[in-house]
Image (cartoon, rainbow, N blue to C red; front, side, top):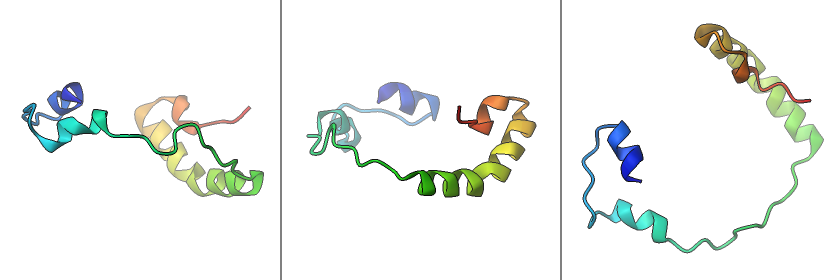
Length: 68
């Protein structure tokens, strides 16, 4: 967590509540509900124009999120 806060220039103190994030109990670890292909396709279609603009802006095709 300290590394993330350093990147954003946020002062980190060990007694901050944010430092307790790593100690939090994970309740549903490992439980995954499958997402239907219909939902995946809808999300892909919705975000495609934004991903294309971002990829062009950054000159990096990895933001196109092309599924194989």
